[in-house]
Every structure is written in structure tokens, then in C-alpha cells.
Length: 527
Image (tube, rainbow, N blue to C red):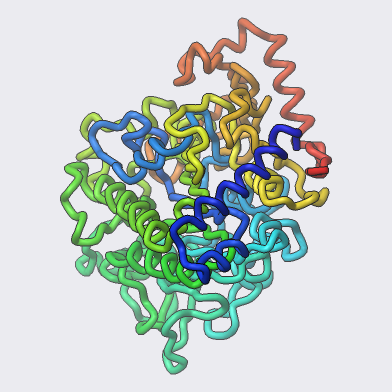
């Protein structure tokens, strides 16, 4: 960490203490003095596109609460998730490593075992070591239990509590996968022991109706796949029976996640905390609460964008009510790019109008093109650092682990953190250049390499469109692709034949990173 950042760290922590102590009773001041480090609230959305937020130029849908974060913080215009699908992006965020370095970190089955090694360094573990109480609320999709999978009716372990979180309240996989229950810490919420949950992803079990056999029972029909067990009128991926008292209500999932987040914030207001609020919105099935149904004019997909904005507003409001906003860093981002039809007939395509979820970028979720990994990223610093600015620095979500370690005074990050770099000066807005390069993972692995103005996609003999339904270009071709993304941000003109030297250079760099287990053998030393 540079001297400049070390000085700023002292400044920012001192500022937090001074601001928080003003106009408070002596008892409150005592509590505040114990809380010298800034709280961190990371709102991690699902399938939200670079063009889905009005702060990023959307005009057909308005997101005032998210826009307010941008007005009071730094909007990053060149930020990337590490992958174009959710499981690997989440793995990278929490471990500081590209997910493709570990086998089995593609989109996880709903009954997968825990993908993160309990002995590995993690973002919540690092913050625990810095004195933080850590919590995760919302979508997980990183597996639960040992390698045989979760024991749904018993203690569900290992899971988030074994990799650095003090509290967890989870959607175990995704909203379109069974079991449709919440898991709090190690147990299913409201589970009746006389009605145990059974889950199978290969064969039908029990007598619960399915979308394939009983389409007349559906309130939302699948467009492809998603035709297994019906829960709340929606057929899901996978089969389940039991746990009727524990089933979630799709329309109130956001309210449930906000409520648990508020309770976590309120119960930890007198000590530093880290909350990862991993929203279900705007993933399928898109079932907005009645408060938002029909409000966007863009159908259910637009409605759940409004619902997501409501979630952000509720969290900010809670921080204000608890006098914590002046001592809390708020990060807002998405796990990958957008998808329109991802398995349900919800009129997302028909009612899209002129709205452009990728803001014109090519591809989308699953793709090797930038539409799959370029995402919104906003950071609101509580002392007004960088207020209202836009950063064009190249940033990756994989860097949050080392950057937050530096911010919170952790002396070093262990060498099992391979890819995360200390980008604190970038996140603070002081460095407007950022990374020199990033690797981008499509649904078929790490095929893209971005360095400076250039984007290289390695040859891959794969499908031209996502094979299970979404009309999205995969970016896979049998010849190399090279784009000058400064001149051609939408990756329309493949100039590989014009720059064979650049193709070889970037191809060699990507190959070396993929075969080199330790691309970033470093420790973040603050002394």
C-alpha cells in the first residue's frame, strides 16, 4: 500500500469517528469510539446489465435510489465481473481467485456441495480477522454441505459460517431451482420435522406436480427447461417434495431479505460489520411484489428492477435511521451481464421496447463478449470521497478481497489468494488507470483476455448461440478474435488478421495465466 493510501486510511478512519461522534450522548460516543473502522455493505445483484440502471444511461426505467448512490459516490464505467455466470463470479468475489482455477466452479447444481475450501482465505474471513462481524443475506449458489451435498433435514454444513461469515440467511441456490426454502445458518427455516424435504436433480420423486406433466397449474410458463416441480405456480429446475411450511413466497422474497438485512445491521450497529446482501432480483423467475407489478411498463423484468431499487433505498434508509450512513461504505454491483429470456415466458422480450440492458454491448449473460461481464459498479464513500465522479479505470471484482484487506488494516493476504490485487487507490478514485489486464470467463471457461484497449477471444469450437434457449451470442469462433474496444466498444469488427503480432502477444499472455497457478504471488504489506 502506498504512503498516500496509508495516510488516507488514517484520515478516513479519523473522519468517521469525528462525524459519528457529533451531536450524540456520551453513551453513544463511547460506542462510536469502539467502531473506528467503516462498516461495509455490499449489495450484489443478479443478472443486472450495464444498461439496466438510469445512472448508466437507461431511460425506459428509473432507479433513483441507485442513482443517488452514484451522485454521492464513484460510478465505475469500466468494471467487470470475472465471469458471465453467477457461481464463478461469486466464487471469485469471495476467494480473490478466478473460479476457473478450481474444477467444478461452473454454474452449480442446486444440490452441490460447498465449492469453497473451508481452509482457504476468503473476503469475509479477512474482514473477520480485522474485527468485523460478517453476514450474508440472499442468494448463495456456491454449494452447501460436504462433497455429497447438503443434508437438508439435518445440520447443513459446511457453508457460509465455515468460510468466514458469522451469520447467513440464504436462498440455497437460485430462485428457479429447488428446494424453494430459506436456510438460516445451518438449518432450513420453519421446517416441520414431520414433513422432511427431499431433493433430486436427476429423477422425479414423490407426487408433487411438474410443469411438464401439469402445465394447467402454472401461473408462469417456462420457455425452455424449468419444467420440473411446481412451487407457487412456477415450475423449477429439479424435483422436490416436503417442507411445505418452509416454502418461500416468491412475491415477498425481497421483503424477507431486506428484513433480515435490517436486523443484521441493527444488531451490529455498535461494532464494525460487513454485510453482503445478495439479492434475488433480477434473476428469473421474475415475480415482483404487488407494489411493483405493472409499474415499469417493461413487464416483470422491468418491475423487478424497480423492486431492486426499492431494496437499495430500504438499506440506505436503515443506515440513516441508525446514524450509520456516515460510517458505512456502500458497494453496488452485479454478478454478470443481463439475459432477457432465461427460461420463462414473462414478456421480457416482447415488452423491452427501446430499453437496452447491455447499453449496446455485444452478448450478455453466458457470453465471451463484454455484454456478459461488464457490469455496473458504484461505491459510495461515507466521507464524500470522489462524490459524483465517474472513473474509467479498469477494475475487477476479484480485487475486493485484497483492497478491503488493505483498507481495514490487515497486514497481509496469504499466498492462496492468487488473482486479487490491492486496488484500493482505484476504488477510492485516486488511480484512474486501474488494472493492466483481466481474464473473462464465459459459460465454457476463460476464453477472453482484456488488456488496455484490446480484447482477445481465443479460438473455441463451441456453439454460436447459448444452446439451452437464451438468444445470446456466445462469442465462440474457431478463429481468433481481436477487438479494439476503445474504438469499437461493442466488439463489431474483428481485426485479428490485421494485427497478428498483437494476437500472438495476448494469446500467449492468456495461456501463461491459465497454466500458471500463481499469477499474483504477493502479500499486501501495509508497513
